[in-house]
Image 1 (cartoon, rainbow, N blue to C red):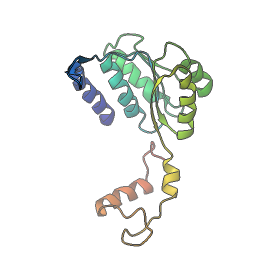
Image 2: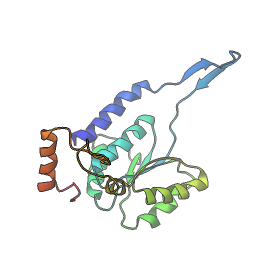
Image 3: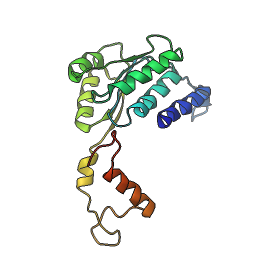
Length: 197
């Protein structure tokens, strides 16, 4: 909760810094004017890990900029997002500004939204293959996209673990005994939201 709330605090403070600017062109003959405006309707797709924080990380800047949003949480953690949307309604975010879409038929529901001419931005956090598919779908209308995609498991499998002083080792030990014990505690008794290794 605190992690998620911190994103909202950060972006609420940034609202007072949203301003345009002007400067002289490099040749000095004209002025360049920059105006900041909302991008428009935004579709946000969030992952299962840190569901509330990943939601506020996407929702915070959109509210600060004045954009309407539709948020699609992963089917594994829909209640966190629904609760977050209820909290925004409780603090009187206008009806229709923030909407949540829950479905177990993600592809069938998302594609029509992504290809809708009213949509202006797509933001996604998740796997690389899904991100690639979303970019392809968004290309038809040249949507602005923000993708946070990666294959962490594959990268970690390619690492050679061991002492940092040994040749060929690419991932050494933790920084100190405290960190080692924290990781050991997570492995021995993982929180319910953490992946089990």
